Length: 238
Ligand code: ADE
Image 1 (cartoon, rainbow, N blue to C red):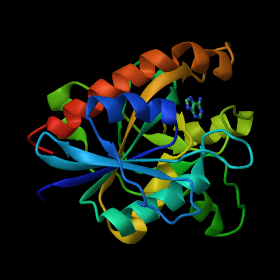
Image 2 (cartoon, rainbow, N blue to C red):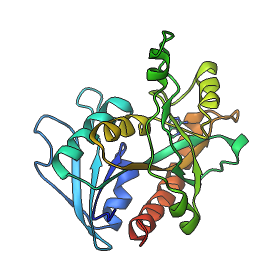
Image 3 (tube, helix red, strand yellow):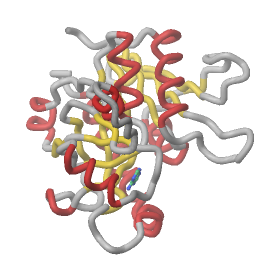
Image 4 (cartoon, rainbow, N blue to C red):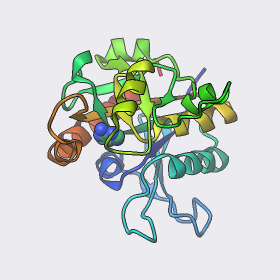
């Protein structure tokens, strides 16, 4: 399939800003319904139509609309309004040192996307809670561009309980973050191909707190993410 029109779903303004600047994308006024906080930027990069959709600020709390609810809604609106051939969910994530993750690494998703914090212990609802939504096969892209690949597990918390960690392991995941499965759920429903690109800010199986690691490493991870996305969009085989 030829990819001409790519939409990137990004939760935090600080994750998106360097990319918007580097690709010289322009803000699209009126891209989304008036009362929604989402922001759309678009332009052309390496011969492809590229849109970046950012979650915007919470009117109540004044910070970025991170996590699964806004991610699902903005993905749906992006598909409805921009009709992309491909959705890429880009952002930062925690990684598992026990699987070789290092701060600043960029990972491409290896499906399926799962949740580690939706526990519904009833027949078949259990599997529904965990989810299982496909990723585009990123093996050629990763091999050609030299990125790591790993399975991603999503939840609505930056920290985690012991049970969350157990479920991340049960999901076979290497990466923990807060949007990808929600984006993938909408993409599966709407039949739009999707994968995720995540840069590691923190190691979830190390003793230093996630928040401290996240703040200390955000700049490095976002810079690596931006370089990676430009190379991915410019890749001939995409
Ligand atoms: N984003 C960056 N690090 C994360 C983590 N450890 N958990 C969830 N989201 C993250």
